[in-house]
Length: 196
Image (cartoon, rainbow, N blue to C red; front, side):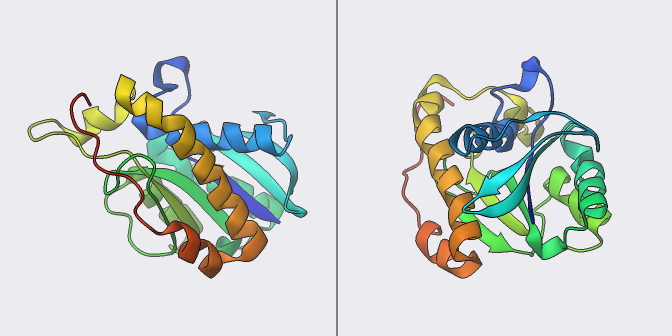
């Protein structure tokens, strides 16, 4: 069984904020795979089903980003899921919208959701699907930037980015980590200029 956790913040206020791209991907993946996500236990909205014939749990932690590990840890413990069978989908300022990087383990780059998950799982050896959201212009605080809604220009690129991220999750499950990395760890976008 695989646990796929998309990170974000609960509530309408944050629905299309940059920090919530993990939630957007989980919702899209659930639609693609006909998995119903509903409010459940473990401080998460969860759904159970199959992706590429593999049993999965889709989870959207409802603890707010900085405590994501509380929910992920509870789910992993209850369902007996090994750390290496956990896939975390999250935003990353190191890449532009549409760019994806897949990796196992590594650092957190200060991402508080990842820090929480590492702390609650007892280590970093889970799979991350890192989704680009770009960086704020000079002088803008990163904390404010990630909580802002996507700009109009970014919203135009968002559907393709979300679809590609769903494909990346499916590829990890169906083909394995390294084939998925070879396929998706390539830069495909240019920096968005103008309005952010």
